Amino acid sequence: MAANSGKRVKMVIEAYEQPDFTSSAGDFSLQMNPEKYDISVPQKTYEKKNVLSNGEVAPGNDSEKLEVLTFDFYLDATGIVPGCTDVHESIEKLRKLGLEINGKIHRKNYLKVRWDSVLVFPCVMKSLEVDYLLFKPDGTPVRAKLSAEFEQFIDAETQAKINNTSSPDLTHVHTVVAGDNLPLLCYKIYGDSKYYLQVAEYNDIINLSCLNPGQKIIFPPLSYGNISSK
Image (tube, rainbow, N blue to C red; front, side):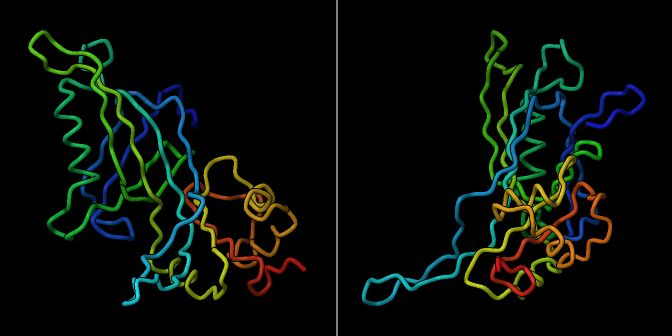
């Protein structure tokens, strides 16, 4: 997390009504920052397959791997930590922002999870689990642990570029976070860092030493075009 004149920067979940992240629909600042967050890629994702009349499943194509961001955080209305006076109210605000259908766009809001300039993750919320931990005598919760899960959102322009990568193998899209570099990312995805120049060329990256948090990088299959394992 970047320093800002000694001021503690809060993680914030920003909501938008448009896929280009315009037309703000509000935001939710975490009362307490998470101790850690995880960005992972499911082992495999699949398109829905059709069941044939004979009961067999028609073959389908693997879709691109989408990253998943997960983290836990706390809400506390005991007064020990400022920023939350009603646990229920805060949870409902977050659910409305991330999980409920926005009537104006007939779908859930587009989100960006932002932690200063270190983490910028375009996404949609997949799930929100709440574990109530402390209560008033009348049963009103005053402390809760929330576990949030977000799936990476890919804009139409990036998706079109992925669709043009014709290969039976999976295409990987990575959202840059602070500390990322192309050789290391190529090693994680391909098992070899030597492909970083080809990946840079494919993504029109000129300055290899300057990757911006929130930037999306496409890693085509090794069998595609100039990304060759030979």
